[in-house]
Image (cartoon, rainbow, N blue to C red; front, side, top):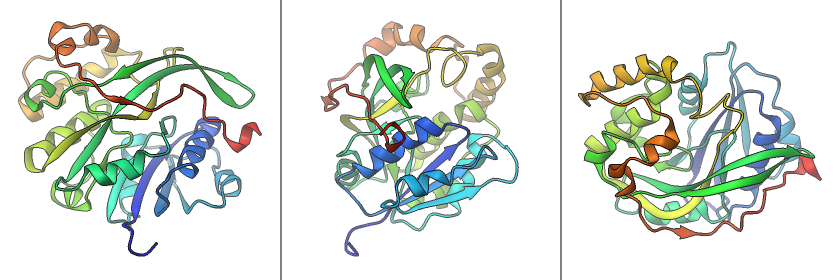
Length: 271
């Protein structure tokens, strides 16, 4: 194992017991095993159960003393990194079994690599998320176009620690768009690559109370702040799915390797 690079995975979490267990299950199923898993509990209910549920995984839990939201939690996780590479993952997203192995192959000659994703809707049943709908999110890597509409998802991205050493931590000021900001900063100074495989699964809650859905008015100030920081000009505040229908976005759709069988990833909570 020692000749294999260590991958440090940072997972901010807040009160998502079922989702976190499914993510842990997806990490347990990885073909690549040399992992440091950093779970940053953002002052939510205890997540110590996850170490008992998956004792095979090297899970380190950091308890935040106050709820500072997910960007601060990621930055706290950065302080614990011991790996040769860093991977980010939201607590409700999932990684398919070959994901980490594949990203390590793809990053050779690059500094940051990110996968395509399948976005899924779900309902809960017996401590499991059952898939109700899914669609592929795969777009060509085009920095100029990604200044208008970012097709970078942070979950499952892999990068070298040198990226953080040069850029500094994630920007808490741009909050909703911290990942877009991180991508733009990284693409400016480092070798970035899209991996054409949909090996990460992005959870989209249909209830409209989380993730990319919801309060566009609340997001506007952060979008303006991002635009000013990177000189992006006027950016539209539109529903995510409406943006996907824009001609300039549709023109960037790319083919990708599909490896998910569409089955839910049942954790040990459901067994």
